[in-house]
Image 1 (cartoon, rainbow, N blue to C red):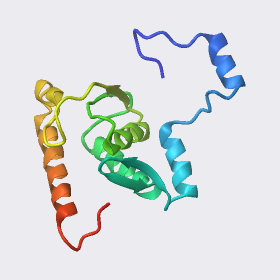
Image 2 (image 1 turned 135 degrees about the vertical axis):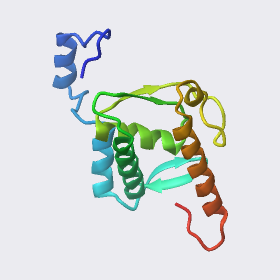
Image 3 (image 1 turned 90 degrees about the vertical axis):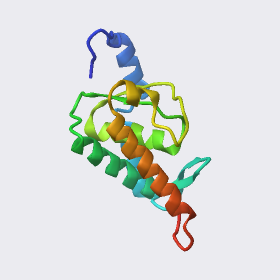
Image 4 (image 1 turned 180 degrees about the horizontal axis):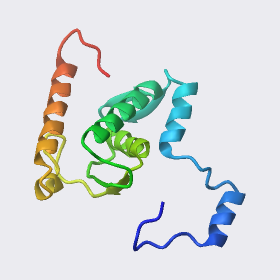
Length: 150
């Protein structure tokens, strides 16, 4: 999908990339689907907060993709993503493939307990606050005795 103002790949380069299969015609979401079909119980993602199996990762990606659609995000819409290399980044990156929206990745500022600065500047405060509250509820559940962590 081309974006106005950004040049497309030169035809010769595209042919070379396809010839040597450097481009497989797969999105990261496609790769995740294949891995979760083959290895649903194997660890697929690790960060400082824990790990997720491929199956659990796919479930979270699907849930976020449904949420994006529920927010009214449509095919080819631009979505700003401003989080560090946490597992949430990978989830969001793969979820955007499901909805065919375009991701704009931005350098993160703040912590897990703060909504991103751009959320304030773009009037996405309600969504940012909801994300922050959901994170805090999840952290609370993790610390509750007797409940398994995800």
